Length: 214
Image (cartoon, rainbow, N blue to C red; front, side):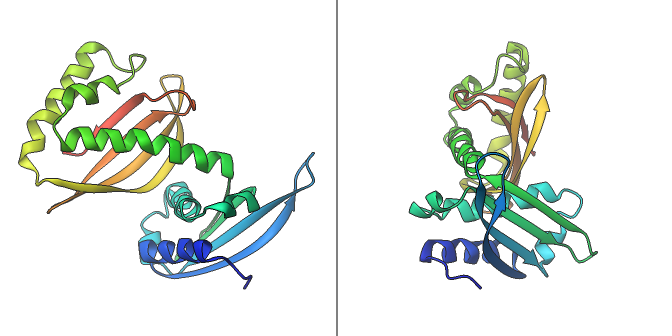
């Protein structure tokens, strides 16, 4: 295996902590059309029971693997153009994907919206949560209905301790390009789930869809 930095090693270990199984890695370069070679860090995940839960939606796991590794990098981000993921499932299915550093940086940026949304729910700041909802995807009545539902059901759950994204999907919704962030909301007991679809424009911080699992 290639020699890697402490931060890269930390990223690989965090992937193993999340999914279990076995993780191999390599560093390489692939030809691009105009700019010579793209340098990449490749992660290959196998023998993971947790991974097999995503065999029908491998993109969710692949983006998460790439992002977990990416968020552990510091100066090493300058060393790569892409993070490659290879997922091998027990049924023999293989999924490969690559993510540019810019795309992973955008995911990090969009997670700020998720952090704000969970914080508003945790601290019962429902009016602030409503302000995050997009006018393009929600009427005022729809916003009020969603917020009222969350406000009613939230007290029946145990307090929120934090959250943990478990995957991402790129989708189109109501004519908008969105990032669907799939999240486990960590509570003192009985965790819940959240799906948050946020606008992919770097300058846009609105939520186009919020599926709060009651």
